Each structure stands twice: as structure tokens, then as C-alpha cells.
Length: 216
Image (cartoon, rainbow, N blue to C red; front, side, top):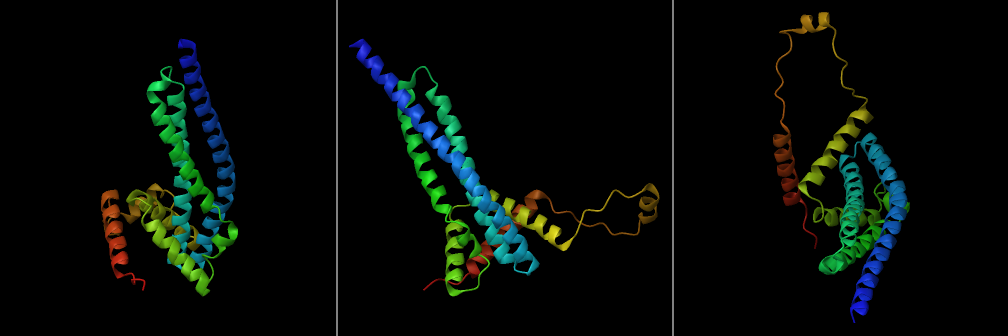
């Protein structure tokens, strides 16, 4: 009887390890495919900024951030599960592992859905009625799935791309003579702290959401 029980525990543990290997292999495949898509989304954001369309650039970067966060979430979850399955007392954590694998499967399905191909990404650039409907659908979907931190990181990337597209560079360190000559000639510019910037961005997003037209 003891041998039978031990055999069952080992088989459950081996099965969990195999399931994790399958998920890890899928994740690696998805990472390569999603990289092609996110690279294109970054380029689309640049194109939109060159055309002066900041809202579309932001949408492309938000979609990219969401996809990257899904991959990171799955990678982190698998690492935690790998630690659990290496536990000698696997039977004590078996339910947690099974639940975690189920969640991993669900997220992988979501990632797979996001890999609709480059044709979907290109619709961000288009002006057709179908493309506009798709852009609104993506924007609404992302609104319920991205944290304030995610949104702030997206806006940081957008600002960096804006500087890149406009050719604005941070100035080199001034020489001592130039620095001395400029003393007292430039007014102090109040610097926005990270906390103030985050608050301002949250308020701006709230105003945008409040002013957005309600779908019929």
C-alpha cells in the first residue's frame, strides 16, 4: 500500500513537471513571435508621431506593453511553479501547482490571441471604419487590463520616442566657461517629481475617460 501511495505522488509530480515544460516551451515560442509584433508596434508608434498622431502612437505602445506584461507574468509564474514542484513534500503544494498551471494555460491562451498577426497591428495605422472600430475595441480592452504603473511606463516610452522623432537630444555637459557665463542668466525651471508626474498623468487619463463618447 505504501509503495502504491508513493508511486501516485511521484506520477503527479512528474506530470506537473511535464506540464510546466510544455508551458515553458510554448512561452519561448510565443516570445519569439511576439517580439516581431512588438518591434513593429514600436515602429508604428514612431510613424504615428512623425504624422503628428499622438493618440495612435500611444495605442500602439499600450498594446505592446500589454503583450510584454503577459509574457513577463507567465515567465514569473512558471519560475514560481518550478520552485514548488522541486519541493520534497510535493503533496502539500500539489493543489497550488495545479491551480498555477491552470492559470498559466489561461494566460498562454490570451497571449496566443494577441498574436493575431502583423495585419492586426497594421490596422492601428489605417483610417477605415473597420480599423477605427478595432482601435476603439483595443483601447477599451486595455483600459481594464493595465495598471497605472503600466500606463506611466508607456507614457515614458512615448515621451522618449517623441524626443527621438523630433531630434531633441539631451545637451552635453557644458564647459566650465560656458557654465560660468550662463550663471544668473537662466530662470530656475521647476522640476516635476516622479510622484507629481504620476498624479498628473492619472488625472489626465481620468479626464480623457470621462470625456470619451459613450458607445450606443
